[in-house]
Length: 257
Ligand code: NI
Image 1: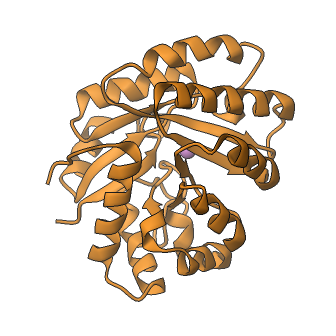
Image 2: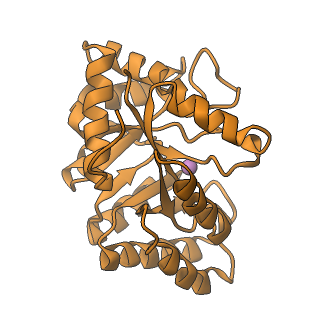
Image 3: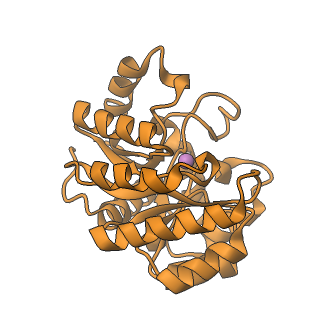
């Protein structure tokens, strides 16, 4: 059995509206043992909690994504705090900084920090999104040193070393299979497998040979195969070590074999 742990998915996305139930069955009979569905708003966080109640292998992260912030976000923290007390919530996420989008940066930083403080208070890890904001992300991580995952990692080897040195994990997904993924390949080569977790970010970022199509957790084996090649090991080792890492960071004691 493959025993894939997908640390970052968005099965609430409308891309799954037509066949979500069928697909979840396919995912959990197709070598996937656990999925952490990420919140981006109060609504999708609530949806994540709902999925975690419905499917044994699904866990939830709840949080406000930088791309989804507005003037109401500060008061949304109360709803996130309440959702975080649900039984299968394993993280605050996804939170962070996205300077590609037009959301005011001051608001992004404020909400990132408020949610890091919430995670610290609740004793939960975080899942962090960093797009075109490496400098500010690093500054904030150095100051608050949360536990958790820097997802869809797009920084340099130096940044990966610093972040993992702070005790965090790096999330690697379909991008590692792309032809132009030299930076990600370098990061995977230089980091110990013990600091890497696997993720889809589905429905986005499907690996080669499905690039551009709808992604799902079963496709993680293509990223795992590529990581195995880069690190000169076999895919089962990659799946096993990254699964253990995921269970450690999310404090998921047992997964269904
Ligand atoms: Ni995501």
